[in-house]
Length: 304
Image 1: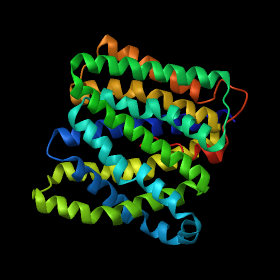
Image 2: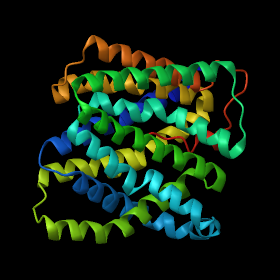
Image 3: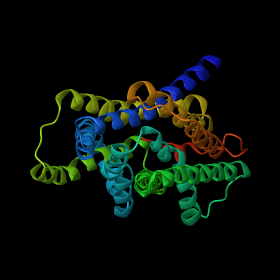
């Protein structure tokens, strides 16, 4: 049992490390020679091809799902989500991207109240309040730098809302994690080709080979496939609530990784923001509540 728990904790840590690394690698890509449209195209072309056999195998499950839910899932975790996130990272340091994993539990809660009339424990309400405090603190800092920074933070907040929409839609659709991921990856690959070709026609450019291979490997393989496997395996070994609690590490990991890899040095204000987000996600994960998160609910709750 102890060995099983250790494996579960290790798998959960690998998962959140990949999630945090996704923000670093996306920020790195748009800082160099790739645009947000390139990042989105590379991610879903590679992931879509890899997941196409599974999408075909799961087509009966997918086709039985209401079309509006499929559309919301595609928008929430597919090309629109990645494009909006990458546009934010193009203009702001990686630390601003913490708004995505940090605020997503709050948006999921608000949507759950509206759609499912869900009620929450005191611990989770404390978590949502801490997240709200973090949002207000970050927006106040951005306002001091100018309105344009507030608008950039809007990209990340919108991305978090998109992912929350995916989470709630998938929860209602009741697709398993692999089928849902296959639909989002393959569907985004199919529907993003025409807009990307138009973009290339308007702004013709060559894709940097080294940067493209790096993005394909990280976005298409590590984020889309490896993190999905490690996440679900962690849930099997240590349970849903403990696995979800590891998501609280993402803000701190992003801040720490941004310094050596992107030369983005955190400030004391950044650490306060990270603390609000970390504690908020930890309390919102339901680890401190008697009610445990159902596995089928958590399996839709990925962060990248």
